[in-house]
Image: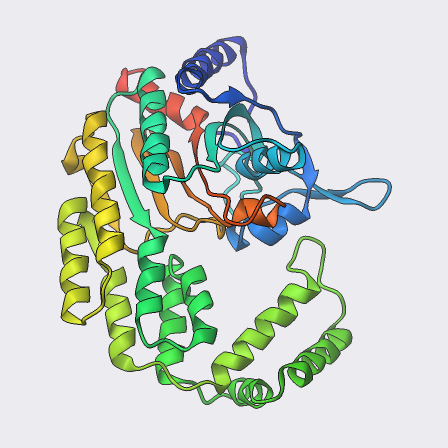
Length: 389
């Protein structure tokens, strides 16, 4: 697939027919179509979407000096549009349009792609909303013409509950929750927190971490004055200072108990057919006298509901580490996978992001979950299934 895709008449016709089928499924479920602006304020992505999207976002500055970006996805713009327009809740919104992402080191991957999706905002029954969105994504894929696909599920809330139930220093909890899906980084972090470090940098950070918070901040602000302003598109000066203060607090804190670290690692290693994987998590946590029963039961309820959508249980896997690549996800997450001519391909994904709307100005506690379908990938998978390449 070309890095800069073009669309001939035949491809446009297929993509349009597919989009109509997908949007028809959403419309039948009460989702109204919206179209947010392609150009967006850069800060809402650079501050809220996480490193994975931050480094792949096309940014630019308008003549007045305002930093903008080409939307790298549509979830954030749809939510921002609803909040800024004073929209009511619950709200069911859907869309189909182009998004743009830089693909460093992978010029064959498209920088521009079509994305269709749906967002369910402000519902009270979160489990029912999770099932509704997953069901809508499944129905949309089938309506577009693809009948066979695999499903991967996870729950950031389960891992969050595990960290809160364990003897983990408060200053480490948010960091562990935020990065647990980044396997190599997280393993190195867990090792550092449980074993410590003796480098000069670690000793300096530990010293600064033992200072009063205002003195520690002043020291790091002085360091940033010497270094200069971060480049455009990177983390903001305040983000960098907060990160350094976090690292200093880690270096100054007591070590994480190795038994606790082992349990965290063992739970995150669980992956496989969903019912067996959940049973394994239950066995590990019960042996450690950690109560995750509420989270496990909620996930099992979702699994039971998936049966209504005629999903073969053998094609549903659960991975404790699965968190997708957006920092705003907070709970249930899922992906739908198929195969195109080149191999396995993710055709859809979604999840719960309950804190995002509040940061955009919605009332405190406004819930949100959505799904997105990569329609060009879906078309490629359909063509393979139909023997067309």
